[in-house]
Image 1 (cartoon, rainbow, N blue to C red):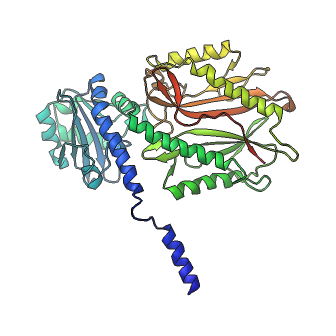
Image 2 (image 1 turned 30 degrees about the vertical axis):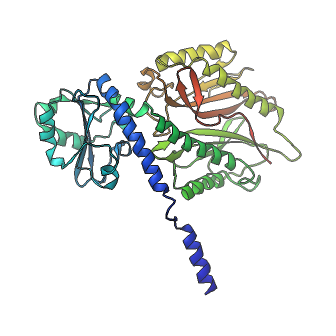
Length: 433
C-alpha cells in the first residue's frame, strides 16, 4: 500500500496544476504577435512587393511552414488563409477551411468560410497578382506542394491561375520584420537557452573523466522536456575543439581535464527558435584557472565583437555590410578567412556567419553570410533579429602554433543606432573543475 501511495503522489506531481495556465499564456502571446503583425507588418509587405492577394494553402496532415504564424486551425481536407489588399488601412483576412478554437478565438480573421468558396471569393475581389508560397531558396516561403499548386490552378481557373506569383519576398518581410511582442517572446527563449547552456557547462552536470558529451546533450534535452520546449537543431551540439579542430560532437567521448568544450544549440518556444553558443575550459589537476594561452585566445575572440558591431547599420544591403566588416577586421589586425581554414601565422583569424534568427534558428530575412546568397542581397532594417556568430582562431604556443577555434554566438537585434543583444552576450570563459 505504501508503494502504491508513493507512486500515486509521484504521478500527481507530474500532472500540470489547473490555474497555472502556461498553455494559455503562450497562446495569448502568439495571438498578440499575430495581431500586431497582421495590422502593422502585412500591409507594408504586400504593397512593397506588389501582391494584391496572398493565398496560403494547407492540407490535412500537411501544414505550411507558416501554419503557426497564421494562427493554426484544424483543416479537414484542404484549407486556405487568404489575405486581400482592398485599398484600406488594414488587410482583409479570411480563413476558408481552417477552423477550431485556436484560430476562431484569435481575433485575427474577419471571415470564416468553407474551402469550396475560394474561387468565388477570389473572383469577387479580382486581384491582379496573387502571391503563393513558392521559392527556390527560402524554405519557409516554399510551402506549396506541386499537387496543391495544380489544385489551385484548377480551382481558380483563368484569368486568375495566370496571376499566381511567388510570394517569397512578401513572406520574408512579413516574418522577419519584428514587432515588440516578438522581441519579448524571442528574448524569453534566448534567455532560457543561455541559462541552460551555462548550467550544462558546469560541475552541476559535468564530472571530468566520467561525463560524456552525449550525457550533456541528453541533460539539455531532459530540461527542455520538463519545460515543454523544443530543441531547435535536433540533438544539441556538445563538442570539443583541439589542436586539429573538432575532436567529437555529442558522442560517448568522455570530457577530460584540459578540454575546451562548447555547446551550440537552440530552444523552441512560442514559434521561435534561438541559436547560441557557450565555451568552457576543464581545469587540470592543480589548476585554479584556465591556462594563459586558452584565456588569451578567448579574450581575443571577445574583442572581435566591438570591431564588427561598429559597421552594422540599418538601411544598407547585407552583402555591402559584409564587405565593410571584412575591411574593419583587416584594419584591426585580424585575418579574414574561409570557415575552418586558418592561416599559418601569429594573427587571430576570423570568419563570421551573421544569419537571421527568429521563428527558426536559421531564419529568413537579411543575411550577412555566404551561404544564403539571395538573402545577402536584402537590405538590413531596424528590429532585424540575427545571430551574432563568428569564430576566432588564435595560435596556442603549447600546440606548436596551431590555432584554437573559439566560437562566439549570441542573438542580437539591429536598432536605429546599432547592435543590441537580446540576452547577456558572452563575455566569460566558463570553467569546469
